[in-house]
Image (tube, rainbow, N blue to C red):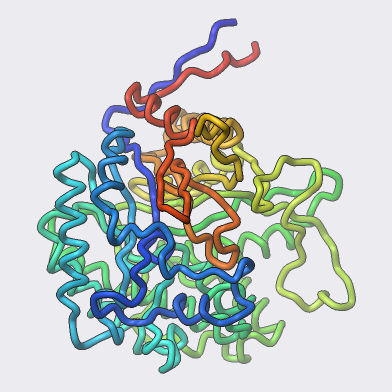
Length: 464
């Protein structure tokens, strides 16, 4: 049968995403303060290839070139993050005007190129001076975030029409404060639960500030979310399935949508000794109402599902959940994530029918594959092209179910510093030669340009 063509709704936004620490470089230029990722990456043993984000993709100096590449690809939107310590070197107080002006020029350049800016205020680069005072485990950091959000939105709010407060609170909590794999490198789950609350609280407090300073803009938050899938040969018992969903998803979704923290997970954490007997003693009156501030959209980052099975041992029987991340029956990207496109359809449907967000954007979706330039300088990354095509097909199926999906952002615009993996993983549409900063459009980028131009793509017809 001939291929059929999928068309996305009129006004559907096609974009790509990055974050400040992963691409900007210029880590100590123009009065920028130290971030927790500067400190973490400079500490031996934290980064797999012993690299840092000191230079990364040198976007701070090459942003004109990068915006021109975005325009050439036909991008309609660009999600980037603002570096908090570039604006407030010590986290609060004195403003670095040079840092503010950099993002103002970037926004102007994007708009001149016909690209809608989608700034994220926090993508993990907390000023180190705030971390030295306790970081996100302290309520004062949430207060400092509101000051920062106010300063940035007063500068850019006349031109920015879409604001994202936080990127992936789960990653900050679990990777940074429970497992110690991300900055600030802590391994303290009771403290991490405080961190989760103060992150969400800072979001809720910032929403009305952003609305005041940018009154005709949309405001939202981005979560990394995981469809929970029973293992193929070892079906998870319902309690394990429920715990996984609470740990990965509901702990953040429920309070954002006015349902408070899930009671079953609070009980789990009390029983495991992660919370005191009285429970959430760091939640103050009015906090939950603030966290549930009405937003205009939910940003969804999707990479991989969680495959569950019952696997209880004497060592983990008191853990709040027992799970297996992946199973050998599936395909994996080079970073070890399972490629499971239909999980995106399940996730989007679940979010819409369970939480009813008025609008959703896929704010990150992508895959790490190491394909490099061949002898002719061409990057034939067919695996990434297939990954993007299959996930866009899943997104389109969610649209057919009535999900209010308004846009899609590939992660990432360019290869970059991939956190604790350093430069060994490549997610970009653009190949970066880190020695000379040359940018090369991969085959997946050229395919994505065609998708944008046609607002859709051709796929094989479904079987009868």
